Image: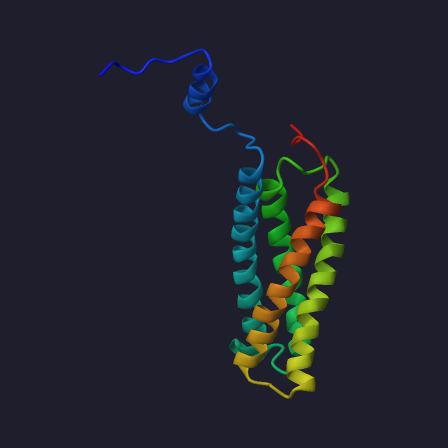
Length: 169
């Protein structure tokens, strides 16, 4: 057997294999990485949302025990700020614009639509269907509402919020 030889045609492929991954991945890898980051930020925001919702409804003093919609609106508002910070500085860092105010306002608007989806799910379950247990409220608002609103949010962020090119320095 003879040792494998490389040709001029093999050199670019070998060089590409040897390079370390770039800080700005391209193609499908970039989208998958962005979705993983979006999901991670979303998971943290989910914990904040669900935790605060349940704390307000069922925690000490049951501050908003008889007001599930108000509790949901407050928990979504707080988790929106957490998610904006994570998405701006990690998920969509290469797509953020120089105007934080513009992004925050548009981010808020996209999240208001997402919140309306979650609140509508909670309203239907709690008031229309009469499913008033803690489990039913959590499933309708924090599972069904989250699933429906997450896809909408991701598309809204990419389309209207994080529309910049390279990250500002």
